[in-house]
Amino acid sequence: MNFLLNTVAMSLTALSVFSAPLTQAEVVPSVSFNEPSIQAYKVSSSAVSNLQAGQQAEQDTNWKNVPTQFINAGGVNFAYREYGQQNGGTPVIFLNHLAAVLDNWDPRIIDGIAAKHHVVVFDNRGVGASTGKPAQSIEQMADDAIAFIQAKGFKQVDLFGFSMGGMISQEIVLKQPNLVRKMILSGTGPAGGTGISTVGRISNSDLVRGMVTGQDPKVYLFFTRTENGKAAAKQFIQRINERTENRDKEITISAYRAQLKALKKWGSKKPSDLSVIQQPVLVANGDHDRMVPTVNTYDLAKRLPNSSLVIYPDAGHGGIFQFHEDFVKQSLTFLAK
Image (cartoon, rainbow, N blue to C red; front, side, top):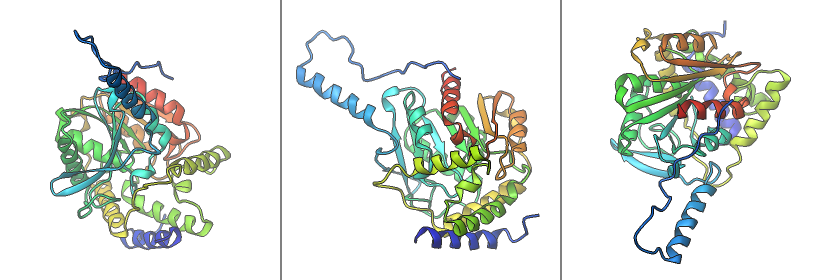
């Protein structure tokens, strides 16, 4: 389905679900498990060459060319991309936003964090190249994420959740607190937060707007309409399209509909007691998020007892993409503490 038809279909879907009207950082040294230890025997020149070649291959891997892999967990074949393993340490699991597939992450953020950390990004069940029936609640998405993490054999992880991914992250740490070391949450809010149940209305409006203007809807959803915002939006869209080969499958209409329902439920439910979350959390957003209103960012940070807050000026839902250089520095500093 081409861009325009896909946009129209998603717009109609959103209307069916939401029918009401719109009323700086120090350098962190990496840890390499690939450095050869001192041995009592000589290492052959060919072995050294192979080792160096392997290290170079890892260094050359980036979000533009990292291969897509699959792993089965609970009967679902999850599509994922993984690199930065040579850095060792706690893996950073990225959790996707509404309608996102692997290719929707900003390469500058993924590559920036992968320069110092082992990073893993996966498609939710029934989304992109992952198999299965799409989950219809944030809680189900959290269960799927836990199953994926366990299938990968990770004993403990750091979570990076953007927008809907931040909601999934909250559920993961509440369900399995020992599984999580730290969290980075951006463009998100607590259950029952202001305006979260009506995210679909905003999405619908901007999907139609994108169709009419021939623009990617994220130009409107993620960024302000100031000159700075427009420039940042253009650059962001260019970055997420840098990968030209082996791109992920787009989200289907049924999966999009399921995610809209999940967000509506999340936004309508009673807030969870987040005071039990003792893990360090970095909370970030733009000061003008109209998708998940910025008031939720402040509220979330207040509810989390061990949080730090970063708010970017003249920025919207995608503030971390607009200020990606600073955000990567902030994230690396946070993860290294």
